[in-house]
Image 1 (cartoon, one colour):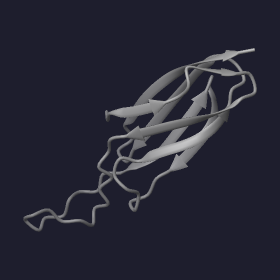
Image 2 (image 1 turned 90 degrees about the vertical axis):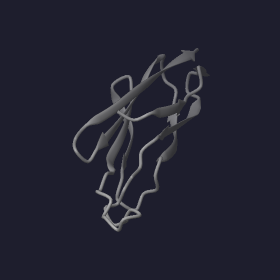
Image 3 (image 1 turned 180 degrees about the vertical axis):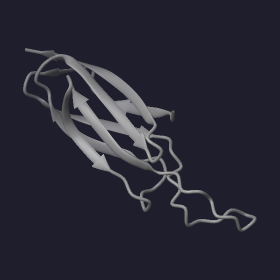
Image 4 (image 1 turned 120 degrees about the vertical axis):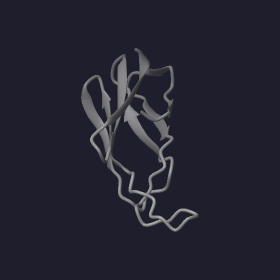
Length: 107
């Protein structure tokens, strides 16, 4: 499991478009670099990211070896009702890192 940071407003008005930001501390090793001894550093990348708002997918990203370490994403979501934003990163070995944030929507 990797360390994540999430930025979601605590509250929003119904229908308002909010910005969601997230960062995960991950090395994103391509498998092409070598260490100080000349040994290949094993490939270790995230494969995908999904954000769900009250169980409905609202954003998806696929990652590839050329992606920088510690991927940062920012995207927009329309606030429709109070609920939970669930974040899920899938590593190349199938392991998951999950986080969530609560959003309160005011009428």
